[in-house]
Image (tube, rainbow, N blue to C red; front, side, top):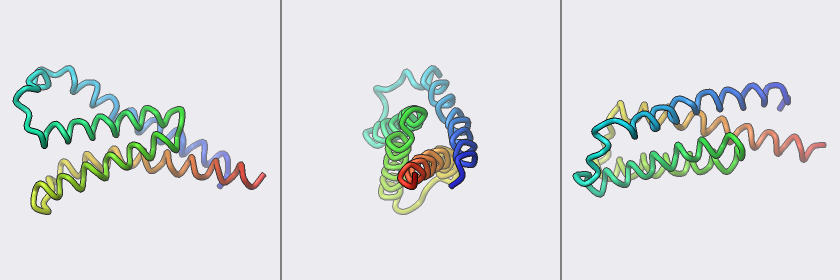
Length: 122
């Protein structure tokens, strides 16, 4: 893949990753997040997986492959656990939220793979 195109994809992934990172940081300071004691184990699992996926996006700013894979694996686990817990049904808004975080994760992995392939070719 062309180096300039990979650079554009890299910056697109970085800019798009700011959306979920910003939302998570903002959400952690909202009053409803202080009520951790009333969360069910399922909600704890969801919260941990979401935080892990966003941390993966932050890691991907420096290490694209590692961060992108962390983000994609944690979001896949989030999707599958929600499907299992909800009898195969998923909230459309939750699915959209997962897609918003998955997209930059995929872009980071594509950039990493393209950069790796370009280095092997030279």
